[in-house]
Image (tube, rainbow, N blue to C red; front, side, top):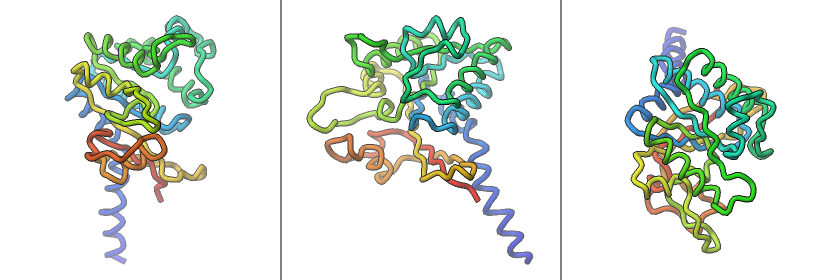
Length: 239
């Protein structure tokens, strides 16, 4: 029984500790870089809650931060003025957790936090590609402020050769070509159960993870996993 108690104390809390420190781990990355791009699989509540926690912790000491979101830039006035329900968000991205995140960010602003919420996606009818539009918006914001951007994983990939010969560099790739001090973190969900709370762990990207993110969209696997992203958050059931 003593050995069982020892294992419970040593092994399980280490996994839990990694999850609890996730926002702090990301803040450390942001402190060392001008821009952090957080990729996501859309409509996952863990992702939007993580962003809110990260912004809350980072700005708690009076630091300023631009939060760049995958919302059409013609919605900026609605973001600034509210209400949250008036903001038009693409159905692929929109979900209750996303609206809660926006509400929480507004509350932090009204409480005096130095937060700028920026809509970076290309509006409908734009002749500029979405990734190019997002990259330019992030680039301009990064000239005066730290930036954290929440976008779909495919926009956060650092380098990719698309299938069918498509020549369309991602937002992250274009920012790197502009010389932006950038770090990218993708997110992966391991068959989540709706009945259990998920815990996230920040790890270095490896070949298997890189192939997972590029499968079905890239012409070939990367030679170096770091060409895809710097880090990955893996969300798993915790028991």
